[in-house]
Amino acid sequence: MALTIGELGKTTDTKVETIRYYERIGLLPKPPRTGGNYRAYGAAELGRLSFIRRARDLGFPLDQVRALLSLSDDRGRDCATVDALARDHLTEVERKIADLTALRRELAALITSCGGGTVADCRIIEALAPHANR
Amino acid sequence: MALTIGELGKTTDTKVETIRYYERIGLLPKPPRTGGNYRAYGAAELGRLSFIRRARDLGFPLDQVRALLSLSDDRGRDCATVDALARDHLTEVERKIADLTALRRELAALITSCGGGTVADCRIIEALAPHANR
DNA sequence: CCTTGACCCTGTAGTTGCTACAGGGTGCAT
DNA sequence: ATGCACCCTGTAGCAACTACAGGGTCAAGG
Image (cartoon, rainbow over all chains, first blue to last red; front, side, top):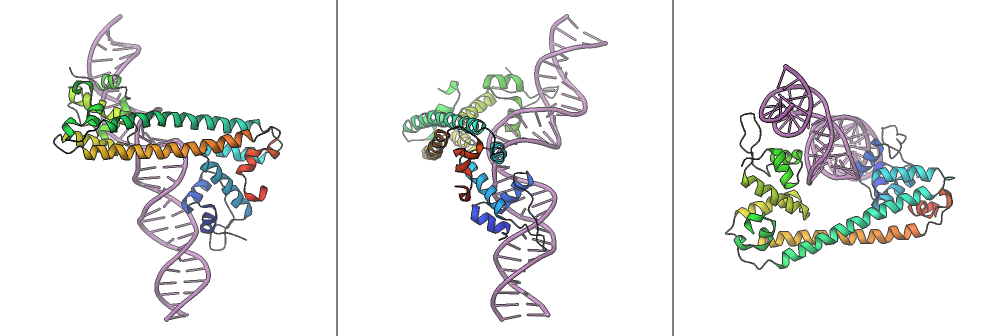
């Protein structure tokens, strides 16, 4: 059941270039090749790539994905490290949400202040312009 | 009242390298130089850079900042384009918030499922692992 | 048997928005 | 005159891909 890179890409919803990129940075192992020098993937690689994609979908950056992968290989180890990684990431996500929420408020205020007319008296431009103009 | 690049950076809270970068990509004009080939900034550049920084703080990407700048120069023009730009950006911010909120829920669920123990029975790793393992 | 087209290969450069050097020059104070 | 903070250019690096260019391979149809 060898898969070509294209088939692997389809089953994991990953672009071919991305798979080669993951190989280049050592996230995926170099697979065996066919006679025609095509990459031939098996179940192990499929599993590993699925894992990577799921972690990426959850927003883990690649270095954390790498850490999770090596933790998952070390099955006797204490789970606390994994938990800490996930908690850190959650904190980060929450910080981003807070930042964006503040931003949304500011933007919404800017937009409702726009009463039409020309740029010369546009409140949005005014709000961006330096103090001298206000 | 000529400012050096460092002084301009301090007043606008911008790194020197970033100012030079903005000049390189044409967001800031090339300023006159002193005898010693130092950039000499005036009030106009200070205003323009302040505008850029404010827009960036509001999360506008550089190409939108560029658009806002050229709109603000064209003061007789209809304000609707500015408004549309801001609305588009707001929509984008809202999409990101929604994405991150969904992510937060998933991550939180993952974390509460972790009951300690070894990696072998870690729910977080399991959730990431391919179907075969579940 | 040959050609067409879809796939695969490597290697490199582009994206966004900076940031960080390396290897020099300038300007002012001591 | 010498130290130090600042300035200059040019280039390379970050994340995480994406997009070529310029080739090779393979199965199917004529």
